[in-house]
Image 1 (cartoon, rainbow, N blue to C red):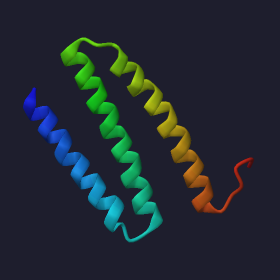
Image 2 (image 1 turned 90 degrees about the vertical axis):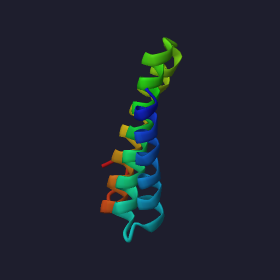
Image 3 (image 1 turned 30 degrees about the vertical axis):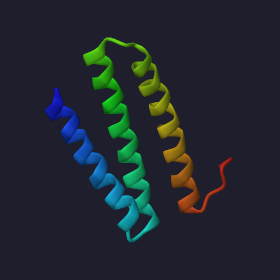
Image 4 (image 1 turned 180 degrees about the vertical axis):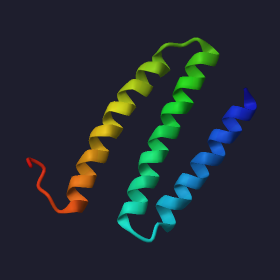
Length: 84
């Protein structure tokens, strides 16, 4: 159990490094998207290990928000309007 959370912490550190050092906005966007996925994975594992269902709800809500924000930011970086 501890090994999983240590591995997730290493993944978070690598994502934060990519967000801080990303040479382009697209690299930063990918880092933020992957960081969101890592947070979802953390919530799922924590929910499975503790038996508290609330963290699974957080993971579902975070995945929906992550999807919408990724699509929105991709359209913005492409130069399209939000209603296209």
